[in-house]
Amino acid sequence: MIETSKASTYEQTTYRKDGITFVPHFRNNNVFIGPGYPRHNQNRYTEAQLLEAGAVKQPRFLWSRGTAGVVNTANP
Image 1 (cartoon, helix red, strand yellow):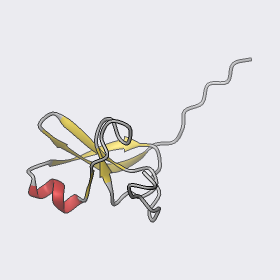
Image 2 (cartoon, rainbow, N blue to C red):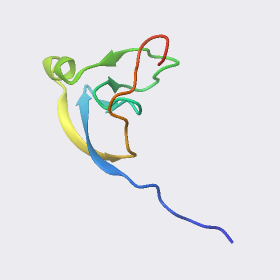
Image 3 (tube, rainbow, N blue to C red):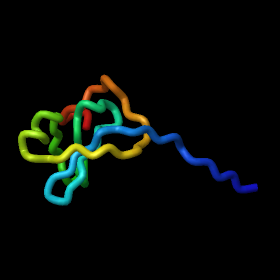
């Protein structure tokens, strides 16, 4: 028997700038990352940085994210 169940998703804030969507990091939802993270793109952003750069807030339904995990170069 094949069981098909969907993982729960939750409405979360994402940002879009120049056709690129930035999503919250899975360990810490206060850190935003773009495509290719962490192998091809190590850039991390705060909400303030994205807004200052002209990104537009867009709600999306994503899997749950952590709220306090450590995200840095040694622990991407």
